[in-house]
Image (cartoon, each protein chain N blue to C red):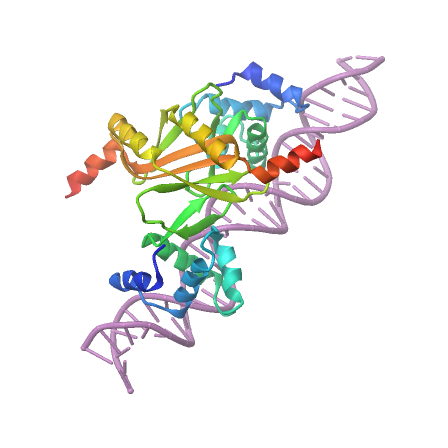
Length: 149
Length: 149
DNA sequence: TTAAGATTGACACCTATTTTCTAAAGTGGT
DNA sequence: ACCACTTTAGAAAATAGGTGTCAATCTTAA
């Protein structure tokens, strides 16, 4: 989780300006650490304090922050992109997506590092990033399903 | 790779009709085994021999075939869904996606099975499916990049 | 062969995202 | 603090992938 000052520095380093809109949007993510916000989510969240911000600006800012690797753009198959802060520590984290309630859970794992090395060698593919998603049913939805029978 | 007769049986089993359009679309996949076709791809491919087929029908058919687990719906992050035949053998296969040329390569691996069991136990999550994607640069694009320097 | 219901094609619609354009604002040098 | 230069923002229109509607047309079981 990069922090505000750090992010400002990284924007400036590439000659991007620090605008109030950008600050507000970054803040939205800081205040929703555990969530995976979509553009519309951000727009709605931000609207309360800054009703003048346009949806296009939100999209532009998300693009920019993803390009700078401050945010990570993700796709959970629900027809919209979702974003979260890049966790720039060593171990990757992955997602468990519940097919019933659509909630997204996270877990960490390093197992993939070794797999990555194997793949890389076997296919000559230079791996930059990976994404692992599990689809299934979360504890709660499993119980509720059981209840229905 | 399920075959045509098998697919017909599976359609009939659920009271879906075997229409020429459906046959043609299934055929499109049979003739493009290694590819990951999008709805538009299918539409264009099919148009040559059957210009009367509508895009809506393509979408409906793809949905149907995915529901019947004949096709698998995938997302490579290029803003459209892509489909391929479900490979219904034991080991899963995953994708290497080149960030330069957007080509998709496949590889097989069973390593994930054990990981799946661990996750499942640790989180109480009932896993139905998983998806693993690697992003990076393929051999060819790596060489071309080197050439540019 | 025919009736009943599923499926189709055309097209309008929808939602997510991008583009265009002009006005307004951030920034480095004074 | 002020200016000039350039980027950025907001509004609205434009795209793009995908879905819904509906009358006409097929598929299939009897």
